[in-house]
Length: 72
Image (cartoon, rainbow, N blue to C red):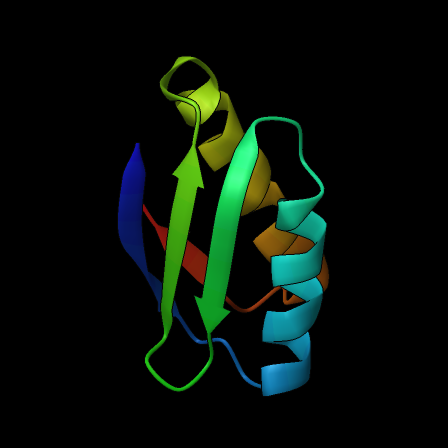
C-alpha cells in the first residue's frame, strides 16, 4: 500500500530528513519520503502492518519536531 499524508508545521528540512531516516528503519517500510517544501509524507509499506506504522510515524514526528503533526 502507498499513501500520501499532509504534515502540519514541519519547520525545517533537517528535521524532515531525520524523520524520514527514522521511519525508513521501521520493519515493513518499503519506502518513505518526507518533503519539507510540500509538507507531505509518502509512505509505502506492507498492508498488514500499515496501521501500526502510521502510529509509529506519528510518534516519530512528535519526538523529532514536537510542533509538527502528521494528518492521518
